[in-house]
Image (cartoon, one colour):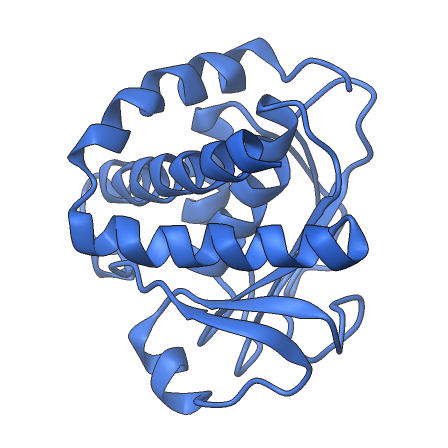
Amino acid sequence: MSPLFQPLKTYLDSKLSLIDKISKERKAVLSSLAESILQSFETKQKANLVFICTHNSRRSQIAQAFAASIPHYFDFPGIKSFSGGTSITELHPNAVNALENCGFRFENQGPPRNPKYSIWWADGAPAMIAYSKKFQDAPNPTSEFIAVLVCSQADESCPYVPGAEARISLPFEDPKSADDSENPLEKYLQTCDQIASELLYTFREVKQKL
């Protein structure tokens, strides 16, 4: 596998230290996610993850990007990440800005409303195409996937996710509250830090047990 972009690798290296700060309760949920991934590998030698929040605008998109790149960081293939919402808006520019600050590279492909972005995390790796969509819309899988609910509202709205082989509730605080502040990037980077550190914990556990 091609090496990660150095700024992104440096960012992920720095977030390994945050793993020790994850609560026992949260680690229990993350271990359940890791176990679901391992069970998928046992039967299919791969795992599809679909991160779901209400608008598919911030948290689910950030989680999808890290879930695509962190397996690359640990050098094991077979993970595909997707995201979706219960409604369609757009990938929020503040989320794009935060992920760029973490070391991802973006290219806006248009159109003006709900544009599609190409996202890269390593030289030679195919781009991930990111835009707001419902969780059941293509190209997301409709069966044999692990649903990860990253906001409380989506968790309540989707007690059952059709086609999912496992359903994990992993809510994160919405950085939307900072959109009208003088420095929204600070809040968005806090969200990135939490999501990155928790997925580092998850995929490290998977790597150790594969």
